Length: 108
Image: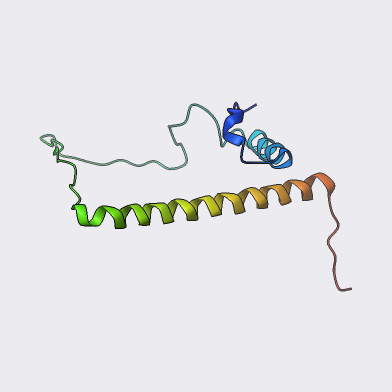
């Protein structure tokens, strides 16, 4: 069973929490701890023997652009939240379909 802090689910109602926990438990191999090593694809970066990574300073943002950057980050977070809500609704519908095996209605 996946361990989730209940305070992180406080914005969901009881049925949404149950649906989310069901999906997380059903696919616990995907949402497992510890995260990290991926065995789906192998990737390597070949470097020369004398390679040394360059250390660069953080990019300084001009004061005049900070407000615009904050607006864009807020918009991206809002869009992300909408997509997560949509995904939760889709998962809830899928779970209900699986649990209750609703018949498919056709025109015939």
